[in-house]
Length: 129
Image (cartoon, rainbow, N blue to C red; front, side, top):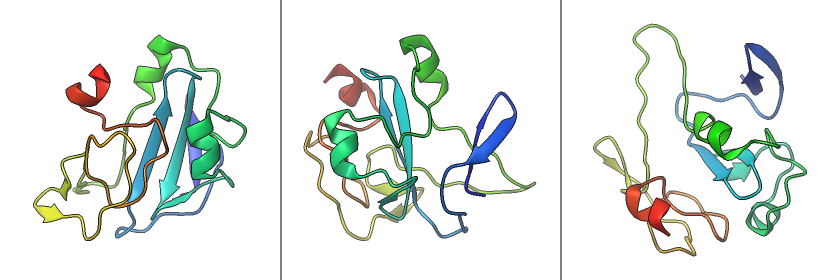
C-alpha cells in the first residue's frame, strides 16, 4: 500500500504495489538502513548509487542496530490465501525464472533488477562475503 510499518504504525514510503510487481529489498547492516524497490525503481527517491555508497537519506528505516537489522529482513503479510514467490538470489520466483538478469557487483545471486554495489544475496554464501 506504499506504507512502511514499525511497531504497528504506518507512514508513507512509496508507490502502492500490485500482484505482478517485483519488490526488492536492500539491507545495509554496516550503516543500519533498509530500502525497498518496486520493479527496479527504489522508493522514496532513493537511487541505486546512493544505496551503494551507504547514503541513508532516503532509506525506509535508519539507525538499525545489528540485532535489530535482522528483524527488518523480508516480512510480508497479505490477504487470506495469498501466495508469495521470493527470489533470494537463485534466479527463480518459485518455479518461474527471472526474465532478464540485472547487474550484481558481488557476483553472488541472480536478480531481475540491478543490485546496489556492495550488496549481495540473502544466503549463506552472501553472508560470508
